[in-house]
Length: 179
Image 1 (cartoon, rainbow, N blue to C red):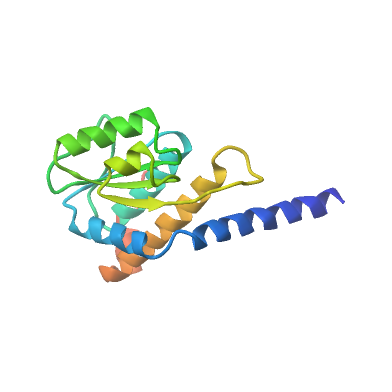
Image 2: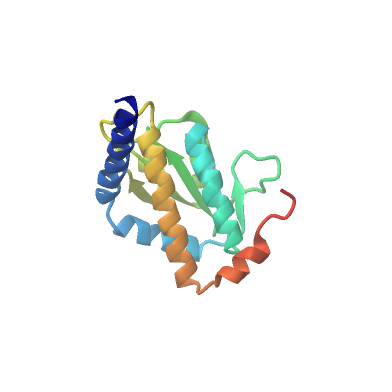
């Protein structure tokens, strides 16, 4: 009986993710791809688990040959005109993520927000916003937002790879070898 409940919970989680993804729309993804294509460099900001999702996205962009940096890293150069900050925050109110957004705005960089609220401070600051409506969930915390963000950003990676006609063999050459 206990195993059946676990299997059922997994199905419910997958259904939640599927429903959330269905509510995001194609236009915000296409706009994010366009922003990435036009950006000289891409910077990623996010705290906690949203930050981890951002780091995975940054790694994938790097494998595709895009110059990418993690905001707050000791090796992060200054952001400026022609650059894009992708800021990820479910609430759109996370202090450090908002600070990175404000700094990017002052430096005349573009800002793309990935957030759960179109009226959040982060969304209001951004040039482009992708809203992930991760509503009521059986999962703890913001798990649904983070899972949906990861999958949506993986679709952005796939479409960016296709639009740039980057063969899988080129990705292998850029993959870390000091693991």
